[in-house]
Image 1 (cartoon, rainbow, N blue to C red):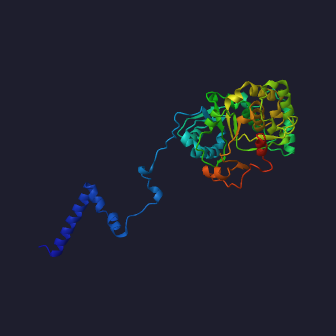
Image 2 (cartoon, rainbow, N blue to C red):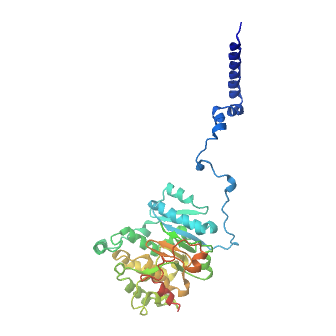
Image 3 (tube, rainbow, N blue to C red):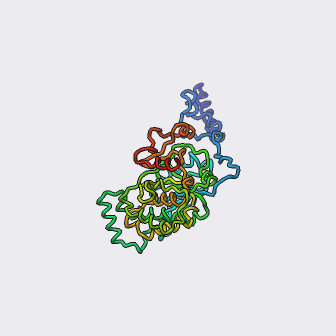
Amino acid sequence: MMTPMRYILLALGLIISIHYILSFTHEEYGKATSISNIAEQWTGPKSNPPYKTPVPDGYYKPDSPMDLQDRKANASFVMLVRNSDLSGIMSSMKQIEDRFNRKFQYPYVFLNDEPFTQSFKDHIQALTNTTVQFGVIPSDHWHQPSWVDEDRASKSRDEMVRNNVIYGGSVPYRNMCRFNSGFFYRHELLQQYRYYWRVEPDIKLFCDVDYDPFLVMQDQNKVYGFTISLYEYQATIPTLWNTVKSFINANPDFVAPGNAMEFLSDDGGESYNLCHFWSNFEIGDLDFWRGEAYSKFFEYLDEQGGFYYERWGDAPVHSIGAALFAKKEQIHFFNDIGYRHEPFQHCPQGDVHAKGKCWCDPSQNFDYEWYSCLNRYDKIFS
């Protein structure tokens, strides 16, 4: 004979059995009656850090290039970098994309004296929706030519090191200067383009660029654009100006009427005042460098060996070429593009600063510091 307690235990056993059967056969029932769910009714649901929850798709808006009404220049960014420059060039490229190229969608050309790694390519391509090409520089465009007297060149480097000349002992730096002076525009990946914007690692682009500087160059027949100008180190180019004078004396027809000689010289070309445009930022016309005047100019300079016997830089070489073989109106100061390359920066002033939503401090501006040549550029138009 069963006692009341036995009936109670039997009923509880049946209920528990039915619960477990339903928990395994009916998922929703199992979730609803789980201990954790029951506990949440008293303590509230267990929370995750906010970043664990993905942002809903409804918050995403696809990038839409600006409506350019089919007007676009034949142009590309050019970046000469090594694989080890990945972090610095990603920083520069991200600013270019955010401030300008997300709207305008110009392609990129990356150049290196050795192949880019797949990791480098993957990181770069993740930053943009536009075309990116990666190229290797031909050996004869990069390395010191065999005809250079290495004994003479090494003695020159040693002397520059003793005199604390920046990059005075570096052969790779000289290779870069020579390449940028006379070979970058010959690279096969750039043959399809007319205009370029040079970008280097670890720069800062301070302002929104809401217009197309390439179209400004094209429509206004500009050949060279800059943001910073300054004096060159005399110790790096002791014979450069005499070499320039020899070339123009032999080729006077190449010198353009209405040129910018007054930017370069205070005495009609007799001496060089060392002013040049800082070429780590430049927007230029590739056809200008490819033209007869500059091509023969570079070839003449190269034959003298000054890139290795001294330390001729691409900045004074480009600046002298542009100032002599183009009209002064064809050289453009991009006043509204805020830019920094250590240790100097151009920061737009006044209304230009506000219009570009610039984030640089206007008081930190190199334009008219004692070592700047912008006042000389201004004077050639006065």
